Image (tube, rainbow, N blue to C red):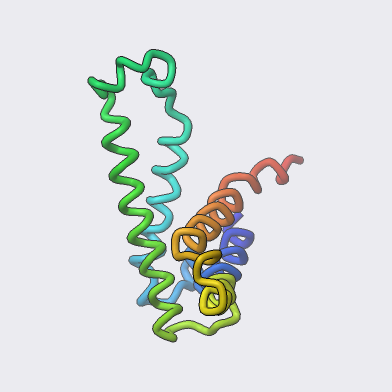
Length: 137
């Protein structure tokens, strides 16, 4: 699973986020990214009572809305930092983010930072947690 996840993160961002052979400067970011993905999976699996009884959203008993907003801001900041690193030339342009930033220059309304962040998150999220289905023996 680590190999497939590293392959996808290198395609998307040009970095390795798993294993002991990460760049020393990226270990903190790698740990943060792992924590973000784990928390997103946990939050995605929680049943929201407010979906079934809308008036319950006013009370937010489980702090679900608060946690979702916090994780949204944290994820957005992390992915924006990756985009800014590519924009400032700290990474090669031969990554998904690099190619999307190139397209953004010619079609800024189609390739916004939000679109790039969303694609990056979806690809890494599904790679991290869906490859376990393919490892059946």
